[in-house]
Length: 97
Image (cartoon, rainbow, N blue to C red; front, side, top):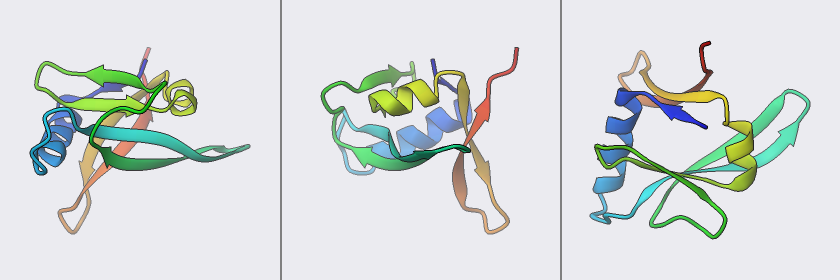
């Protein structure tokens, strides 16, 4: 199952609380899949779609995984990193151990 760092959970909570919807979350869907992996589409969704896997944290961050994305992200960790311009970017990394 996709794991989430505390930093990623905070970033998701901040993003989804901006539009004032309690049930909103960050949704992952597979845009296209090829030999080197999958290209993921990220969006803020007001609620999960039918068939989505829903992950939640104690802090209220919610992630919706479209079935194909859930399979692809099963052994990954979602983190957030800051670039040189100070922008936050989500990063998906392999789980350790």
